[in-house]
Image (cartoon, rainbow, N blue to C red; front, side, top):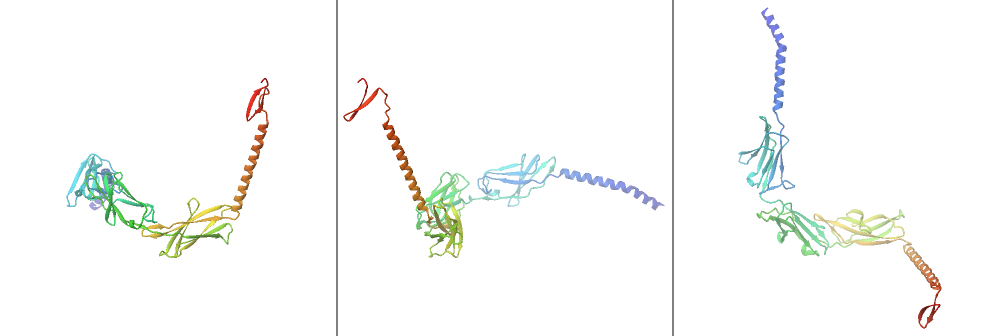
Length: 373
């Protein structure tokens, strides 16, 4: 009997127990959700396009993706000691950074007693040298003898002086406007062949940059190809232009170019283990058209261009057409001359004087008088 009533009590209490437990869990879950803040993201902003940081730079760290009353920046140093900076806004400015400010940085924020988790780490590396400058050689690094070559060194940083090296020896120092420097080689010759690089240093503190990657300038005399042309045997509306590089060479690849009258590239053909190519072009109608053929070869990390050969294609009947045009032009000129002559004679024959005046010859002088004279 007692056992039966206990069982009945348990069965009657079970729904109440389940309801109470579920309500508690739901309330607890809602409270946890209300107190959990989104994890922030720590962002770096520098004056460098590549976010490179050097000694003396000013940088900004932004604790993004959250809003709160207090923001904290945590610096995890290499010696294991952490440093925390507290701020009322999510921006932390670090001025005149030094080597000891290397390391991982985290951020978090708090609002109404709840705090977010720490952000993922952001590593900051402070360099004791400026990044290497950019170096550009134009028009290219391999040129014909006598060509003009320009070397330009540049950097994002201002107020710097450049040094230009040839084969590790300084050949020129200077700066154009504080962040770039140009050097021109006129009439390139074999003496100018070599590896060129540049570096710069800050005028205020003397801190130097890393040296740029060396670039080789080559002076190579590539002779012009030979050029012939013929009508296409399989298509009378087309022409074939044959370009052939000189036989005495050490290259297994050629890049041929065909240019038209306006020096616009008409076609390009890559030749492997061959020094001759054939271009197919539309036959000009009753005209003369000029084509220019050249080739280039791969040299180190650049290309070298040859001199160009010019071929002038004269279609049959062109000079006959020119002769006919000249004859027609001459006939038109003669006809215009005859018309003008006849018109002038007709004008001289007319008496345009008033009827009360006549003229007569008096020696070599023409005297005009009236009828009353």
